[in-house]
Image 1: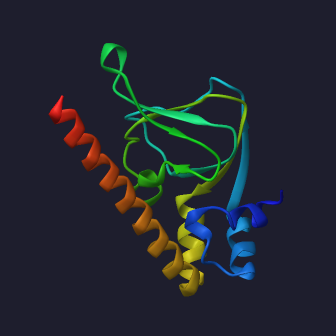
Image 2 (image 1 turned 45 degrees about the horizontal axis):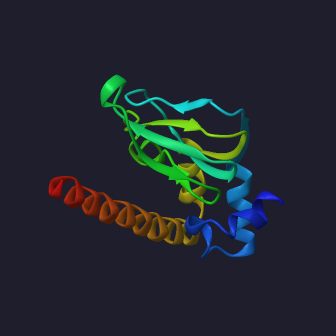
Image 3 (image 1 turned 180 degrees about the horizontal axis):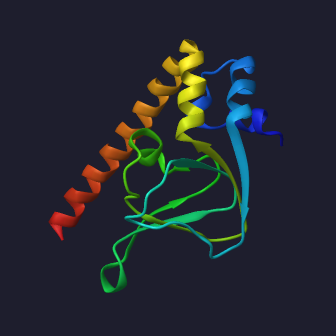
Length: 149
C-alpha cells in the first residue's frame, strides 16, 4: 500500500485531505528493520517520530532488573513523538518484535511542512494533542492500578 493511502488509516492524519496527505508523504522516509532491532534507547537524543506500517514493537522503561514493558504497538501506532516536538532525550527504549517497516518523520521536516501549510498544522496538532491526552489518560489508569497493588 502506498504511503499516502496508508496515512489515511493513521489517527494523526485522518483529517487531512488527499493533497495534504501527499505533502506529508513528501517529508516521510521509510525504514525497514529486522526483528530484535533496538530502534530507540531511553535517555538518548532524537528528533524523529516513527509510524508503524508493518510489524510490531515493544516499549520498555528502565534497565536491568527494573526494566518493564509498558506498551505493545501494532501498525498504525506511532512512537517517538516527544522528541519530535521538543527534541529532548528519549523517554523509553523501543525494540522491533518482528521484521518491521516504519515511516519516519523528522522534527525539522515537520516544522518546515507545518510552517508552509496552516491547514495541515491545525489538523495535525489537534490530532496530536488528542493522541497525547489518550496516552496520559492510560498512564493515569495504570498508576491507579499500580498503587492498588
